Image 1 (cartoon, rainbow over the protein chains, first blue to last red):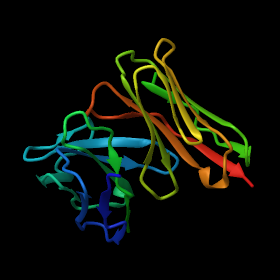
Image 2: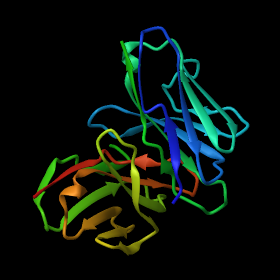
Image 3: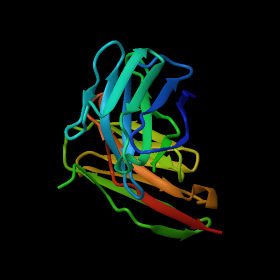
Length: 117
Length: 111
């Protein structure tokens, strides 16, 4: 089955630093990737839709200058949390849609646990 | 009112029981329906994917969609302790579109 790899799985860093999270589709090309945030005991909250070769589309209330998304190839999207603060601590999950028309649904990575001290 | 409603549980059942998980939704435009299983500290794993109304079976899992009632279900037969996880329903209007998730139901299967 399709596999989405996310790295790192867990990161702890000091307040004020920037953190980059990678999302890769390992055995298919992903035109579109999605970035979610999940708080404990809550569902996934979509942050942005990442499209290969174009700017990401952010959901209402998500700061695009805070959460930088780059989708430079059909197999890689990155999320950079800039100047991270403790309130940015969360579980970040990416997913990917297969590029071939009619192929669905989204396949998810295993998430990145981000802890800001 | 949320677009997708799902009872968060927690739901606790004995091993071997039949589990019924449900979601209701408000927008009749949804056409694609999914069930994901999420273990603690892991990403969601796709269990079932259905288009429009009807039933779909895969091993111990059966997904049902009733578009007239705006109601979807996931049944787990002969439940096992390894089925203990959070189950999320999700749906969208078209292929490749963003998913709308339910809150997730936390399931615990006791040996």
